[in-house]
Amino acid sequence: MPQRPKLVLVGQLSVYPWVFEAAERAGIDLILVPRGDDTVESAERADAVVELLPLDIDGDPEGALSALADRYRREPFGGIMAGNERVVPFVARAARELGLTGLTEDAAAVVRDKRSMRRRLREAGLGVPGFVVIKEPDGWSDALTLRFPVVVKPANGHSSLGVIRVDDRDSLEQAVARTWKLIEAHHLGAADGSDPDAGVLVEEYLDGPEVSAESLVHHGQVRVCGISWKGELTGPYFEETTLRAPAQLPAEVLAAIEAEVVGAHHAFGVTEGTTHTELRLVGGVRPVLVEMGARIGGGGFMHCLVHVGSGIDLAAEALRIHLGREPLCWRQEPVPAGHAAAYQVSVGRGGRMKRIRGLDAVRVDPRVDYVVEPVSPGDLLLPYPDFSGYPVMVISRHESDAEAEEYRAHLARTLHVEYEEQG
Ligand code: ADP
Ligand code: CA
Image 1 (cartoon, helix red, strand yellow):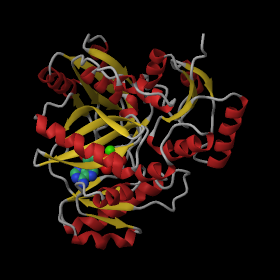
Image 2 (image 1 turned 90 degrees about the horizontal axis):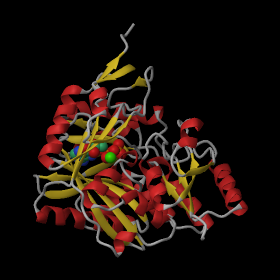
Image 3 (image 1 turned 120 degrees about the vertical axis):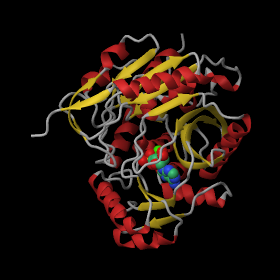
Image 4 (image 1 turned 30 degrees about the vertical axis):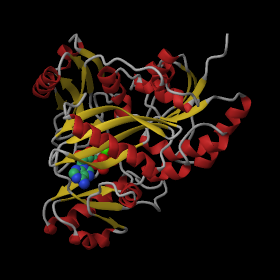
């Protein structure tokens, strides 16, 4: 029998089961490089993991790369894939040095930098809001030329951390200072933790509901596998609580989203792997990119929305691409299985978490496929615009979009984070 393929999965938090389960389904063994905040017990227990390979990617990227190369020389593996946003450039570099499938380093740098994405989209003639790059906190007044409201955000952020809507010019200076502080506190700069790339982007507010598009890309050919509805997120902070798939939109709007997403892949030079693209539908109809991440979105749960909504086993296909193989859905048309929803309980005021009220009923609900709790009682949760983790994710499946929406509303009414009393 041929040996099972092995892939190095970098920084995929092991409490998020989706990519691990996909590897199991696809018959792929995983060498897991645990994320800094993962625990050995949990990482070892994850499906398909045959080996742990701890690397200090943030603290010592050169050392991490040479340890990875040593491991490869001892026994070659067939691929490497990023399990979170921050490691995308490291994984691209490792793939190139080891001769494995991956993003070019240029493309990896582009999708980790919202300034570069905006410039590339503009050059390609795709939709972009007016934007101004701010290089130091005092430079905030450069953005006064924009049409307000605007959105202030870290140039290399994630999870809506430090993303703030500003409605009038008088509030801009304070918002930029606040975002800048969060960039420093979270070391949101270059991938290796040093901060020469740190910066703030201010862009005009795109008024309209938000959608997410999950794609596979192989040898430069892009397939948009699923489009999910995120709905109206008006700020001032952009905590993401809800997604439903497939998005119920007119065929011409879906086609316009697809065209924009495919064009963005070309503009960024993203030719291999999987992507999570967020867009606003300006005026409800005209798609404009917010950003793209070269990884599976939502810590992996976007896989579920695609898998149920379109039948494509997104996470397994992504692993195949990173092993240098053609995704199965390139030749075999998958069959959609219904509607799916993801709900993330709002952090609310933040504090030391005591428990999540209302979860017992969710756990036994037959519509619920996953209840994932990345944080534990006693953990400190920071309210937006800061970010320290999602309290709980509920992934469910439904007969119709209306039922998915009704269940989401039910969860919003019944699930709450309870905090310890502030002393
Ligand atoms: P992050 O990498 O932190 O997720 P994003 O650029 O995706 O940063 O911004 C987070 C959220 O803020 C988006 O999902 C969107 O809801 C909102 N947002 C960001 N930029 C804009 C914009 N120009 N117009 C409207 N909303 C925006
Ligand atoms: Ca985002």
